[in-house]
Image 1 (cartoon, rainbow, N blue to C red):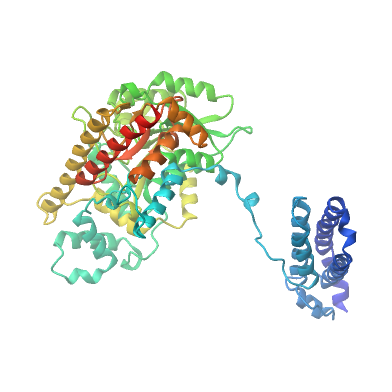
Image 2: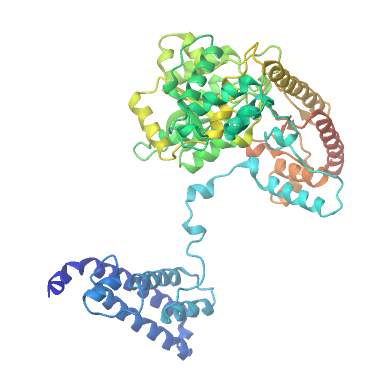
Length: 605
């Protein structure tokens, strides 16, 4: 008896569900009757719809009487009402059927509609996907990442075709599209691999093949891990002892300027930390999105993240004739033009530059800091190539050091800087290690970032261990120091030679202009394309630089990234190539390019 008194209290929610589901079925009927009057010529199908409707109403009634408890069968048992199947499942099926049929185009054949009705009438779920592109986050659809775009996909296809024995004008694919050092033949640093091997498999500590200092490094790292294992979760912001080592590295790099390890976050590569900071500060104001000032050309991570988070990209152009310098009047122009459409909040600076290969002077950095301070912008200093400086007249200046040395009021402004184990002389891209240092952030704001990061648990602890090897390398006198310094210097010296070689080669080619590769791992030459080539690109439905890059790939096997993927001034055409292929392969690559370019120019002259 008490179940009967309780039943009315359970009727409100099921009634609402029933109403919504009836709306779905009504939409289904309305679509049929409005778009297919010849429906009535199909008597069997009418019977299916009637049967479908009767079954639907009976189950809705059963659902209401069931009391809408967590288990409809349980409720039915209590009310002595037998149910042949899950009422919730039926309601979901009916609602989904109505929604699907009501939005289908009138050009879609009747077969699909009848199969959906038959499925419902017989108690089975209609076949087909439950989501389509219409259900995907529109910001994700908008997102583009040129470094791994269609050219790279095609390069992979060509490599497979070559492996199957297909004949091409070349015998191998050269992937110059991405800064993946080890994939291009760069040797790993022995010290890094020895320490991480010991961390992954501590039993190796017993082996005499590992220098004692590598074992001590591994013991220190494992001592900071839960259970002494690299397989344990770390703190969300990273293993404390590694963060302390990062802080010490920053202090030494910047001439003793204090770094608090509590301001250091370890991340899965620099990219993860960059996205976290951008997400943290993505708070629109009065309907206006947050504006992010991004250099053009830029690393596509920033444009992709801006799109993903629904932010507004504020493009400022680097000055190509002045070795890709950052021009303050250009910053001011971009900022003022954006104020009506967004709330400018972040200023991205990549130094050394990707894809430009530029290195900012200290004076240029000071000017940028003053501009950011005057306009209340938070600087995001992407400094992952800080070990990669080749030009004799340039050196790396960290934004933190310059801000600190400028004194009041600049040394109180917020800034986030980023570093990675993927670049430099290490090239450990796949192990995903990086860090972020927060400077002068409000403790409450920092706490929100730490809370957000905690939802991701932690970055890969293996990557954190690699980062420890980068910031805490062997010291003079350590058993590993001599080999470590030889390997490090050999990598950087070779990169310096290749940087000079690639710029010299491009500048010797007709229609090419290439700035000196002062740092990082890329060249970004500008090329003049004949008008006929531009017309051919339009006919192919491609941007001119994309057309050139595809022709280069199909005829030489060389994969580069068109300048339009990074951004460029209107009317100019570029591409980015890495300097990472080892010298013999780089020379082969440049020879292929020269031959192709001559043929291309003659064809479209």
